[in-house]
Image 1 (cartoon, rainbow, N blue to C red):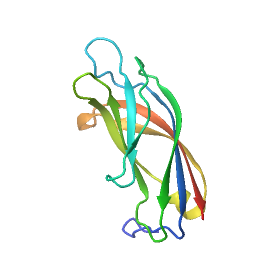
Image 2 (spheres, rainbow, N blue to C red):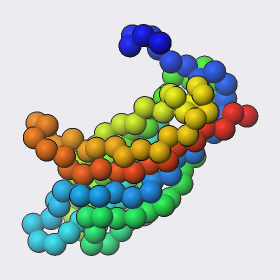
Image 3 (cartoon, one colour):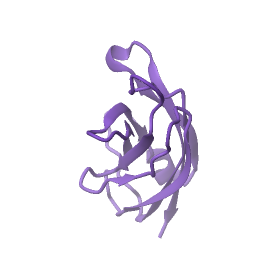
Image 4 (tube, helix red, strand yellow):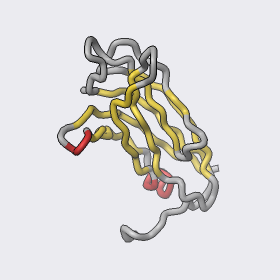
Length: 137
């Protein structure tokens, strides 16, 4: 497949995304550690989120989310944002995306760490561990 071709789901099914853990999260608080949670979505109109983990820059969630994929769908990237829960406004630790087209097209599970790029690409703001599976209906 060329870089410029568009991917569409060969069949309908359910994409299961497990947010396992994160490591080396950049601390957004002046004092202490983050209270992180993750928002994730294929389509921005339907966001899902993990629970908050109190006082940790190395959180473990092991939370699973499902997304319905329609036949011919071009939604093949999981977008996610790691946030630090605060009393007034949540701070963004980092955001990235995960291409899941291989899982959808071949049914091959993806077990990977995704880096959170820092502003201006100077360093990483941490990594998030995902496990992704697609089950055709």
